[in-house]
Length: 247
Length: 139
Image (cartoon, rainbow over all chains, first blue to last red; front, side, top):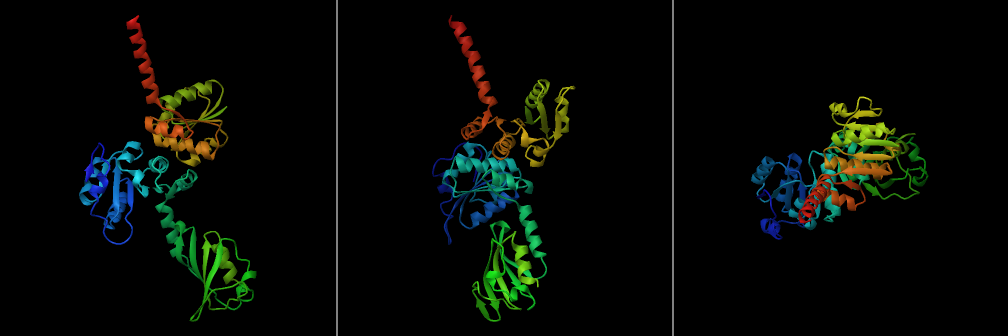
């Protein structure tokens, strides 16, 4: 469905998406600014999962293409930084607002509008230039930089040796890692855990020793061959590795 | 005073020329190197080429210890972001931002930015001119 201009009345939205709330999980309403590669992918993915999706896009050709390829998505042609179009998209009724155009200024301003004027609980902006990530956070907008994320993932994948990242949280700022204790000469094998001097922002969660899983206490000792599972911040990862694996 | 002007179009360059002539330290940023031709031949300030959103350019142009920051590029959103960086992050004491879209101007004015809305100004002035004519007609 493609609205070139003008208002859609209250209820227009629910009417267009009435039969899309099938399947498990709660249905959310998401408004996306930008219908390019990222925007249209997001729109189709959310819409296939049965969520209510509205896309605001400036370019008429892109609007038409998106409306054809994703019939259950409501496409509004307009400027998402303009209050009127956010009103049309009923951002005030949305759970999520995502600004994913190729323009960082636009994404930031659109998110600020959505948050402050329409009180959307969650506003996320795509950050095209990773340099701008700090500015976004500074101005209270949750920014996601694909460049930064891909960079971190590649870095993790290329980590060799005795620390393996099992799971990352908060866009890679925290991680659950597995560290193997290589030899009995490691300093960590002769001191109780509480005396290892583990950095802040890091906690040992469990020790896998043969077939046993041990939930560690401060007075436990590590052994060579143990796999230690830890939650750590990005900053503490190197220190954790050094403390556990060097003699 | 130390002034940073982002955007060297008609408004930006006129302000830059005026303040430089008055003896202030003026730094100007514009995306286009060409924009520098609008500055007077005896312009005493500095011109930097770069995007207003690029914090490293803002830093090079001395945003940190500027007393005044004026955001007058042709993009409302760029101006708004620059103004917010200047105000929130660098605590520049006087930040003025031009916003063409009257609704956006209103919104950010309510959030404490010093916003100049050329549309609102033009509407007011035209209205005054028309009213003055109307009164002349009556008397």
